[in-house]
Length: 362
Image (cartoon, rainbow, N blue to C red; front, top):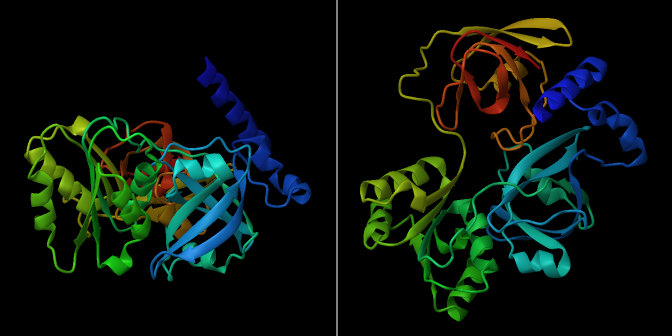
């Protein structure tokens, strides 16, 4: 019954203001009285920034008292205004829980891609700048610290794992971190983790240098003693999936492997660059735009090529800002390869690839 009224209210808002909520319809007016206001988000003020590595910038944020906190390992959406529009990206919280509890501060370690649109803007921020953050989200957190645990982090995958380890106060079982990086100079948060290893005898830090140690060496180390252990993996999608497959082949059950990954999965092998082009009708405010889709691109990319300007945020399937209604047709989830149904349902444009001809309401 509740979902029925939710859908009914959303439909009413779309008819009245062409927005899923009336807050979005009145947003320009609200922002005249409260500059920087973003619905369902919280204010955060930049306190400090420092380079952890040559391309990893750490931000220290003073968060709003209304913000409800986080479980170490979770991420949030960071939103900034740029050229008259709001853009968002997901970042894992890398700081210990005690920092938020004692000072209302959190820290984000952000990999700066100098050719991208969003992350270079972070280095231009001045102390005191006001940003917006979402509620903490995600299910990647340390469930059973009483069980011996092996963590594997690669690159910026260290951020949620560092938060888990640095937040732990009552160590009940051994924990080992294999930190895969290209040289110690590229290891963000390494100083904090080394300090933890020095004062906590149950924690072991293992640095794996990709310049001299092949991935097979790391896999052998992981599988040397896997009995009665749980595993937490975080890093680039392809590498983490490779490690997961190796652990599974050595008898580690799926329940003992928690995985967080960055980036989207490659398309199935059956999808070639010679796949035929597909067509779609995008409907907005009663107007229909017929477009040609590339089956290798996301629906968001295709819509943007035709200047349809759909709403979006993280472009990774995290923030749900690009959710819209699929009227008919089938899409593939770029993260998992899972296929949708052929009928009406909600989809995320940024992680959906076309499989058949489509009708979509923006």
